[in-house]
Length: 179
Image (cartoon, rainbow, N blue to C red; front, side, top):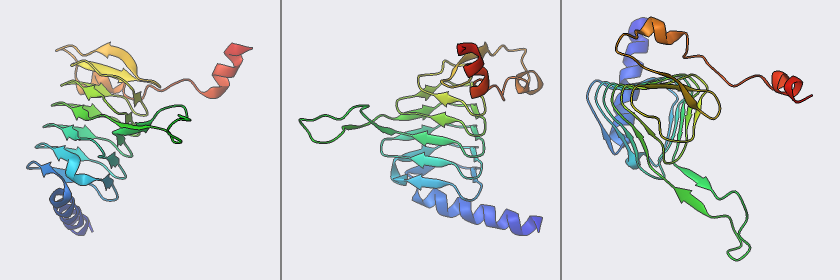
């Protein structure tokens, strides 16, 4: 069964890579991810993309080398103005590129919004919504994402793991604070 699964993943990666604007070597896409406007999506070497990720490439998405992307992450390069413009009779849509620099780890369920650059060596915690640029060597989390920790040369995967699942407070705890 393992061998069959490995073959399916390699075939899936092959066909996805052919659709993208560019794709480096030693890249692996686990099944069921969605790529909208794939010619605007450019992926470097040694990139891992887990299952059910969504890439909306209405503007360029650049993912550099040695990036790991968790389960159900979203990369969205387009959005609408928050209000209706009566002169145009419609809401205005805008597009901004996304750049993920080298050696980045993006936790499961993270959402990267238009215009964001995630700096090299950074970690995005699971469930984080990244609305603005992330400096290099930073661990960000919560909704909207904020810097939780600056990554030091002495940090290891074990020391960073305790931060990767940081999320926003549950709605019930917010309600109790308001009362």
